[in-house]
Length: 163
Image (cartoon, rainbow, N blue to C red; front, top):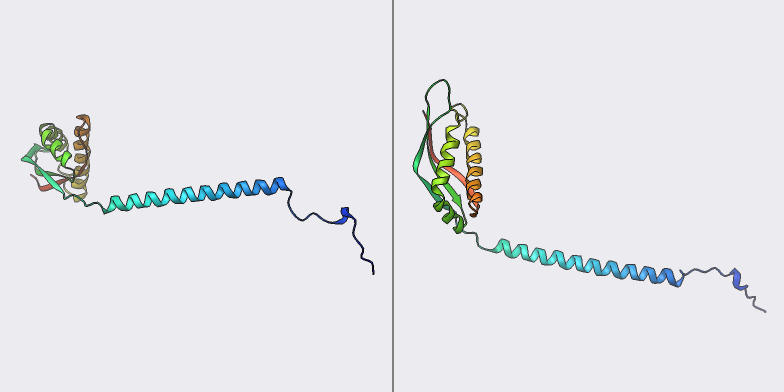
């Protein structure tokens, strides 16, 4: 029995050439390193976020704008007034100091804003809420122009009367 040996040209080459194999290994190693780096970045960011959320939340502090605001409303069909008691809410002690220091400028800006309103705008809850939002923007604007912290959370009406 004689074994026949196939000629060398007839044997198919089933493996990739060495250059292709090396290229695949380099790509696989790069993907492994990038995946590990991305995983480490995500994990460290998550740990930092967990630590930040675990930090105790400071209590809300309220700064009363005394005395009450009393302004003429912008109604053209008669003389109407707005009386409002306003408090500013923040959790930042530095912002509390800034609010107290800038109280005259804040009162001025809020008086001007309140005097632009009409009784029909303030008749509905949505009008009062819009006024609160606009007042918050005004307060932050004054603080920002003075280079003070602007971490005011809300403008709160503790009393509001239109006549």
